[in-house]
Length: 317
Image (cartoon, helix red, strand yellow):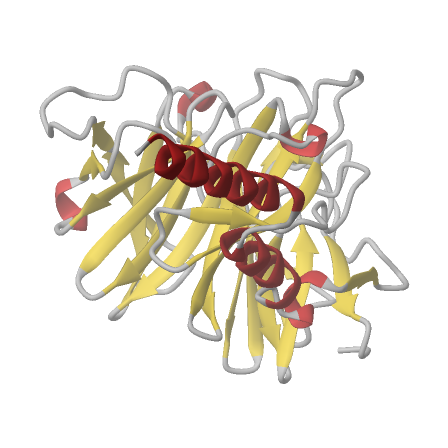
């Protein structure tokens, strides 16, 4: 019996040594996923000559500066851009602007700008469902998120503040809900949001008009770090579905001061569990609030703060 125990112990030791000295099948599959499951059309970017393609109008105008995430929606042959303009002061009311373009490069501002000036609209995104456009944005002084609706992209109806609750469905989230990003699939609305840029959480709703959203879990679905580029702050800007997987465009920042932001990407099969791209960041040097927009057979990457820059795939798209 003692010889059998010694023999089993020796085998266990050899297996342990082999495991420590060689990557496991799981580790190998993870490395393969990192290398192959982020397609080049989403990660291989070069700045377009002639950037920026859109800026604030400057002193003497309502948009002395533009701020944080804007949104571009392509419908047919027209690109639609919504952006946040303000007077340049930290406390200046953030107002909604709008512009259109035939090519996503040269833009014409709406004569109706600002579209909304009596409500704070910042860090917005737009999704169309049926014949209605839904806008989700940060509200007054970044204290909460709000929803607006429109039938024509220009005239927006104020729907009010989002009611985001913990996973028990009863307690309201006790921190500011920021950078709201919505994805719709199979009758469920998914809301990604940040709380002080310290992680990204996910809540869902079956009835968007109720404005009630319930956390899928009370832990973030996209956490800080561990790499330096997004170790201190992150916020999610956009969800797309491509080649059967979900991809999140998000921006991050490390602890180094003065603070700079970068644009990154993560991948998921279920919207809850996310894998960050091993070669993040995609772009650096304060090129943040990034989203991708369909163009031809591929995409363009637009970064939105505090000017709109375009990045194209190396195939020249």
